[in-house]
Length: 235
Ligand code: ATP
Image (cartoon, rainbow, N blue to C red; front, side, top):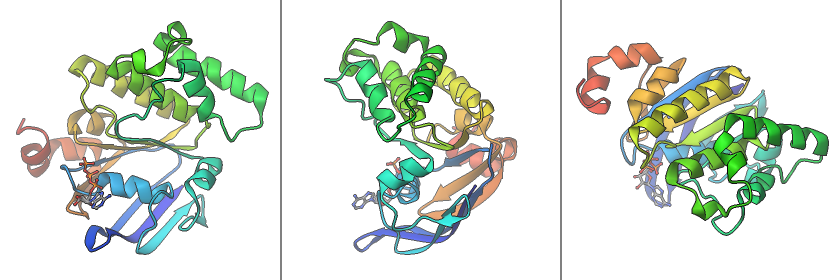
């Protein structure tokens, strides 16, 4: 579904990705773990058209995507849940969700997807008419994910969704991401919270200073001594 070859991205003189190769097959849940500044957000930004890479190739469902706008990428079926959620605090939960379907014209299907999102996130149904900014951090993360799902993405990318959330909420989030994956969404999850992310991953990549340094199944990386020492608190 997604093929990335020799991807290089930079901010002026700062090279953030040095020749990254990554593939995702339809239906997979893929995790990229890495420390602060490893290039995880940059990778997602280049995939969804926010940042133009310096070189390399990105193909989504067989078609080259470099140079396409982020709006085109959403319309092609790629959605990003950005780091920091970016819920619109003044808008109601309902309005935030409607924005996720901004590019869609299949209104009956949008209504059905809204119902499905509210079934997945019952707390949002209770809060539909409240401002997004009145929700807790965990609820805002749920809203950001539900909003992304409203574009009916085939590839859902999530940038550090667990950031700042309590462990119980992180676990709940992990279950929801898994549920979305089982429901048919292909997932690309980047996380510093490696344990949750590796548990739900079919395959995973370790990114360190802009390079892929390890790949394997989620379980292989969970068992890898170097990964344990660097990303799992040594346990
Ligand atoms: P984080 O968890 O902090 O978001 P990350 O793994 O997502 O880390 P990136 O945000 O992709 O890492 O950053 C990769 C590198 O690019 C870092 O060296 C960072 O300082 C640099 N960088 C990121 N954004 C910019 C920017 N807008 N301008 C300049 N340098 C940037």
